[in-house]
Length: 229
Image 1: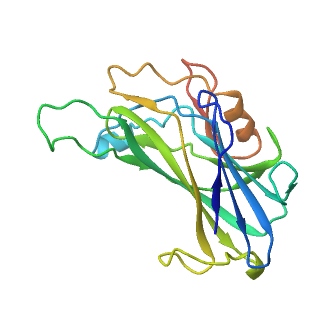
Image 2: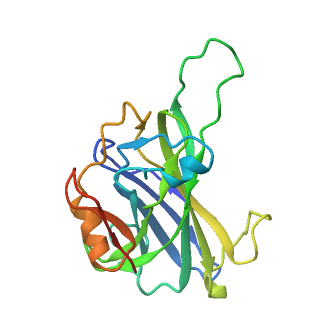
């Protein structure tokens, strides 16, 4: 069973969560998720067909890094991210960080996330050799202040790497929820108040250069260039 491990973080820069678990074969594995690129703003896309055709993605696109080590502790463990035989995906959900004041109870609409909320892991060499999850197509329907929550799932391929005590009966055999990480809060603006999309970050350009599908904006006034796998 995976257990959380607290480590120092700087919430203004990134978010980091670490867990460890002992496998059926006795291996002590450490997993670390880091939000390398935080969402900062988005334009509310509303609902309906027109909204879907004119929606803008959360900007910049969230990027989450996964590292896996084997050993008695994280600091002395051997990095096995590229060698470990398993598949991973990260699922995004949205939670309201600050409620909008309302005159009547029960009229507040729940936050709605649209787009592609799941990402498989890409093995990239830059900015450092690790696994990366990129979310270039997430939009929010209603204005307000939100944060994203990412849940990591693992499909274990080797029986010796299965959990000693599987806990979630709702998942297929060999598929396990590992951990959750949250982003910093970000603002979703109405179309009139939206300050515009920013120029793409160096990190977005770097993962796009390695074949990941990311919308690249060369400057604030220019159009998007699409980069595909």
